[in-house]
Each structure stands twice: as structure tokens, then as C-alpha cells.
Image (cartoon, rainbow, N blue to C red):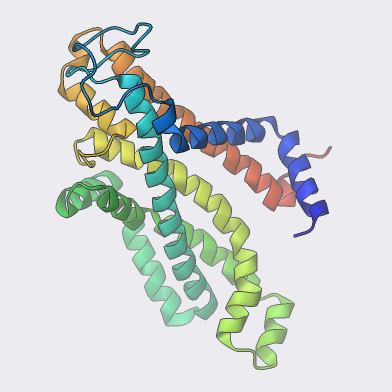
Length: 285
């Protein structure tokens, strides 16, 4: 991709204040996740103070019920929550792309079977399915990623299928098919390039949903008990009496606000990304 196109994309992004704000927040969260061991003042797994200490100059967000530094927990929790969200979203988008492209291109019985499978996943009540899968598979980092991926691929698959149905009727695809070009070559050279922009916007949306799902599962006690994520911090806060003391102010509110901020940053970034990839959505300058 040439420099002019990158400059054009940057101009579109910088003209969208919400999108620029969202990208800036994501960069900040990414830096926190990468450099958490160097930023955190304490090891989040070690007892470094008295239980339920209020915020002070040493413990910026106080301590929990066993004397662990909450600020350090939040910093380390950023990398876990962000990593789970990104990995789960990536797997769900890859699976959604695979099913959506196959269903849209081949149509017929293949399309009918795959879309009925998509409908089945979409109509099953989301929360009970999520809890059932998490409880059945068991709590661990990769099991949480697997659960989120299994319940998040269907919606991207339907969106991508719709795009493929449009792309396969284009003249260049018909021409490639008429001269005997193989199915694999048509899919990789002509269909996938047109699907990637939609897949990118769906990835951003799936990442924000994945972070919310991870927080929900962890808050319900179905997350990995051996990792520090924002969801597990909330779980231990409600399980260990934070709501019956003043500790909820510095133990519950910060992870809740961080989850909200990260999801909003993904939403703003996704909106800006759609403007870049879909010229029809751009405002006239």
C-alpha cells in the first residue's frame, strides 16, 4: 500500500475526533498491558499491606481484603482482559469468515446447512449458553477464550456471507469463473480482499463484546481464578464484602470504569474504521 493511501486514511481518521479519541485510548491501554510489570508498584499476588486500607500515597487505590494492592491488580488485569478480548475476537472472526465465505460462495445446500447452524447459535439464549459452556468446560484462560469464540462467530458469519453474495456477482468474479479459474484462486484473489474491510470492522466490534463477556463470566465466578483480570477483581470484591464497607469505592468502581472505557474506545475506533473502509459513511469535508 502506497504512502498516499496511508496519508489519506490518516486524514480521514484525524478528521474524526471520536475515532481519534478511541484509537488514543486503545494505545494507552495497550501500553499499560505491555509495561504493567514495570508500571505496577507491587506484585498483585503478594500481600503488601493491611486489609481494606484506604487509598493513600503508597497504595493509590487502597488494598483488598487480604492486603493486595488494587492499583497493581488493575494494571496487570489490563493485559489479561485485553488479551482475552483480542484473541477471542480473532478466533471468532476467522471462524465467521470461513463459514460466511463458504456459505455465500457455494450457496445451495451448503449455504442452507451453514445458515441453519448460524440461526441455531443466534436463537439460543445467550446468557444461559454462555454460563453452561463455561461451567462445563471449566475455568481457565484458554477455556474462557474458547467459550467466547464459540458464541461470537455466528453474527460475523452472517454479515460476511451477505458481502460474499454481492461480491460473487461482480463482473471480474464471473470472468474469472468463465475462464476456468479454480475456486481457491477466486476466493483468495477476488473474494477475500473484498471481505477483509468488513472483517476488520467486525473484529473491533467482537473485541469489545469479548471483553464484556469475559468480565461477565469472571464476575459470575466462571473465570480463571489464577489470573488477574478486571472481571475477577469484581468477583472477589463482591464475594469478600466490598459492598458492605467503604471499600467498594476503590475496589469496585475502578475496574468497572476501566471496562466501560475500553469498550467505548473499541466502539469509537470501530466507527472510525468504518469511515475509512466505507467511503459512503464519510462526512463531506
